[in-house]
Image 1: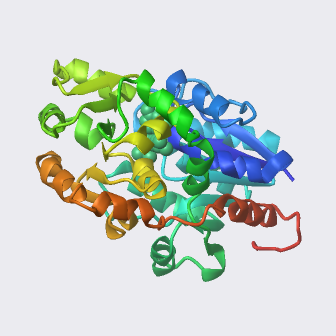
Image 2: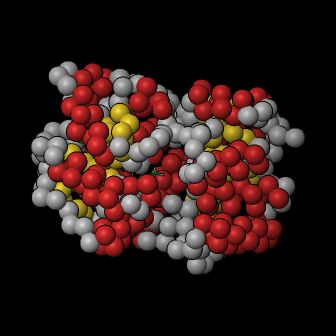
Amino acid sequence: PRVAVVMGTRPEIIKLAPVVAALGPAASPLATGQHWDADLTDVFFAGVGMPRPVQPLRGVGGRDRAGQVAAMLTGLTDWFRTDRPDAVVVQGDTNSANAGAQAAHHLGIPVVHVEAGLRSFDRAMPEEVNRLVIGAVADVHCAATRGNAEHLLRAGTPASAVHVTGNTIVEATRRALPAPAVRAAVQAAHGVVAGQYVLATVHRPENTDDPERLRALLQALDLLGLPVLLPLHPRTRAALTAAGAVLPPAVRGTGPVDHATFLALAAGARLLVSDSGGVQEEVTVLGKPLVVVRNSTERPEAVDAGFAELTGPEGVLPAARRLLRPGWPEELSRRPSPFGDGRAAERVAALTLAAAGHDGAGVLT
Ligand code: UDP
């Protein structure tokens, strides 16, 4: 069997790498080019040891949302029509996953959705609409948690198509986290000392597109009382330039780093501050406290399990104080992740091969 594994952005590469590995020779990785910055793609393909993906599309990055989905839907339809994979795997909630799922569905190719059933219930988020579209066309829904599965069942998805697999980020994190000696070297190279710095990331439009909010967030980081390392997403760098904003004294910007470097820095941080989805999952594997700077989250599990607090820029400092109260970081370092047991990719691969119709399990009709 041949399984096209569609990847458009950094988090998709990170979270699908374990699935590609588990599929073995059946996997046919495909890059849509949604992220076209080498810092966000090439280093990740190399870093996870994935075979270089095919990239059948050109020029889909940098368009508006409708143009991007349209270009990828057309391009992926043409590709799948001639390539005829036995199944298509998409992950998460990007425009790439949306286009990949629709293209495969329209051609009658089974669609497997990894990280299915997340809901923010905020339709103003493009990601939420992508999730709803993918949920409508997918044949196999691999939910990370029970709660995610419940969303799908409540929306009328047949129970036989919904599987609680765990999130592949658990194994992705465990595999990519460098050994302690390497972590220390990475921290030293970035000028930080274990336990004495904050690691932050900011890239969601709700934080970058409003210059006032971006400034308020940087100010909040400056008040934490520890040096803050901020690997800058290209969108954030562009937003800073456009707003004429400079980083405050305590905040040191760097370019985006590869996943192993990011995890080495996260593992040594006293606290993380981020608007990322994936970081909300990773902190539960690393056992670290996290302030989530967002209006809403489709991943309540990290908050419910005590690892994270959700707040706007104005609440960063009080949330940080609560998360760093005596004894709590130690408690978090011992808690299990709510996102699974580290075997999600195996389960996803088995379900995918069944959907591709090659082991006779006949998950699909
Ligand atoms: N990440 C990374 N290098 C960085 C910043 C983040 O490798 O400089 C990783 C991080 O560990 C996580 C993923 O990128 O696994 C999150 O991606 P992002 O925040 O871009 O997207 P989201 O998860 O919000 O969709």
